[in-house]
Structure formats: C-alpha cells, structure tokens
Length: 368
Image (cartoon, rainbow, N blue to C red; front, side, top):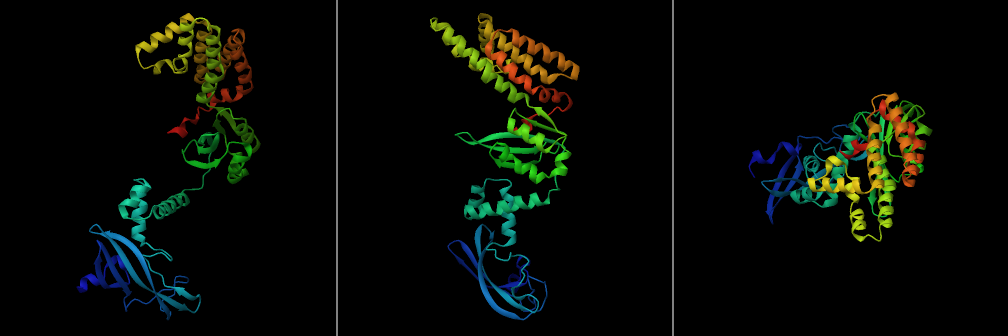
C-alpha cells in the first residue's frame, strides 16, 4: 500500500496495515502509529504504559459505494489515576461498533428519510439506525433551553382503536411540544405539572383545551392563575354529535312511513355537519337548501350551529355576553329537547368560552 494511503485524516492516530476486498466490501486493519502515545479515556492523561491490546471490528462510511469494515487494534492503558482504561480515540466511541462519522451521517439522514430507508442506504440493521436516531433527538432535546411557558395547549389523540388515548401538551407561543403521556385522566396528566414545577405553573396565563373535565380540574389545581380556553372545533364537534345527529335520527324515525323523505334525512349527515363554505359543489348546496326548507327542526339546529360558532368571534366581552344570552335563550325556546339539553350543559362552561375574547387560542396548533 502506498505511504500516502497508510495515514488518512479520518483515522487519526492509526495507520492502515492491511487492505483487502471481499464480496464488494472493503476490509482494513488499523494499528496505532508509533509516534501517537495513548491517552487515558478517564483522566485524559497521555503516555501511560500499555496494559494490553485488543482488536475491535466495526463499520465505517462506505468508500466509492462499498461497505467498509475496520479491524482496529486498540490499546488499554495502565493509568496511575484510573487503573486499566481503554485509550481515547477521537473518531470512535467507547463501546461503539460504528465510527463517529458513520453515526453522524446516519443521524443526519434520519432527519430527512424514514428509518427503513436509511438502514437500506447504509446497509445497517433497523434497530441500529433507530438507536442512532433516538440519540440524535435526545441531543437536540438537551440542547433546547429550559421551557418557561406562559400559554399552553392541551389535547388528546387516539393511539389505536379501542378508546386508548394519549395527551400532548404544547407551548402555544413557541409551538414546542413539552410533554406526551399515555391516557387522558387526571392521574395521567398530573406528571406533566409535577415536572413543570410549582413556580412555572404559577406563571401560566391560559390553557387551550377541549371540554375535558380532567384537563380542566388539573389545570385549576396546579395553575391557579391560568384561564381555561375551550376550543371551538371540539365544542362544535360535540354539538354535531349530541344535537344535529340526535335531531336527524329523531326526524328520520318520525318519517318512517314516508320512505323517500326518511332516506333523504338519513343520508344528510355530512351535509349538516360540514360548513357551508366547504360544500363541494352547487348540487350539495341545493340539496342542503331543500332539506332545511322542508324540515324546521333540522333548519333550527343548523342555524344555531352558526350562532354557536359566532361566539368565538366576539371582539369584546360585552359583545360576547349579548351573543351568548341570545343564543342561550333561543336554544331554550326552540322546543328541541337535545338542543336545550346541550345549552344547559354548555352554560356550565361559559367562562372558558368567554376567555377566547382575551386569549385567542385553539388546539388546532397541534394539528399543524
């Protein structure tokens, strides 16, 4: 092997003593250069006597598309301060089977490609790539400044079918996810507030959430200064399930003798739940207009849905108060049992709806 190939910069302190090519892979033997004294990996002392030699086989970055296997002769020093200790090698971790530059390259591509693709690209096992990706994320997390949030967003999401949920908490200002935990009960989310600490909890001004009683009670218990802000999407979705769907089913049952009219109402669920501006074509708009014109109860709950959404658009507390009182009175006087029942339940949460005027927050930030 030429002398200029024996000492390469990315294997500092070692020289190539053997080079072979087998089955499209390159195999190299590396030994310490005589002019490089060993350095203790514990106290960094240089020049301790060698206790023993050990060979380690590891992977390096591919060269010209060929996998590279290194067989490195490492020294174990007899340090007067630390005792027997492995020498420090800058381009190799203490127990690593991959060089640092290969590990860095894998971690870099993990930020751009799925783990499965990165594993195929470098010819590594999926578990190895996953471990390097987790280390990269841990390093990025450690490098982040200590969070000191003033506004939070809390929401739940389904892990898989069967009503298994997890909770995620985000800083509304920085959009940084602060915590994810399995479950949505008070006991499940309490570790977040324990981690946040009493001092930081006391500085929380507002928390956006759905009408989850567990979230509400736990925020009030740990963040006495925080105002709860209920998210519009979740309230309207709840209105759709408890009011619109209920009225639609009741009307369909009432028209069981009129099969044609009953079929129209039963097939109108998404027309009623979808926002008018999101209707796909003129045909759907015409169908919706005809349906509302033909059925007073459905027309009432549909219009009341628009009034409910308008509560989140009030610009002042007084404007909200007037809109809220009008909507509540109309719901009670509508003669529709499910609507009146929903309004009664919602009246217990009026403070969280009013808070939207002061704190224009929503949980949709977590969907981005």
